[in-house]
Image 1 (cartoon, rainbow, N blue to C red):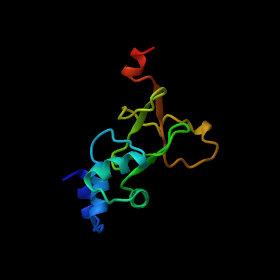
Image 2 (image 1 turned 45 degrees about the horizontal axis):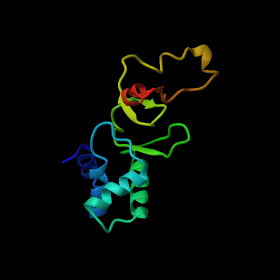
Image 3 (image 1 turned 90 degrees about the horizontal axis):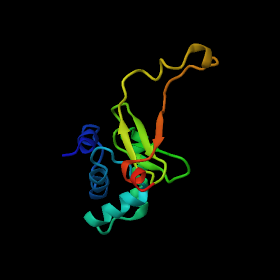
Image 4 (image 1 turned 120 degrees about the vertical axis):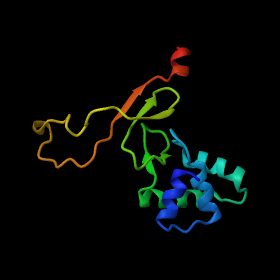
Length: 139
């Protein structure tokens, strides 16, 4: 059973066939699919699943804090099931591929008090940008 499925069962989330398929599609490391990509993979497993059901299920998973919505540039939102391990993202500027990264250090501590302008900082999102190996080889 996937980590996401285990977490959802532990929360007592009602596991319909449609919800289960969406959770199964999202399973794995470095998963950052758009809703349409999730739907395309879910249809293979459960042909009758609708696009609306996928969108609604993704919205519920985000509301529950079990999936993170990732926006990079002006591309479609992507859904990351790695919601319970703090991480940042490495994004290819050409093809848009995304990888989870876990650098050492504390990004909260990297912002000096003089640069906080009185804000109480509660979260940090870091996005590293560059070219993935495939895109760099094509240059």
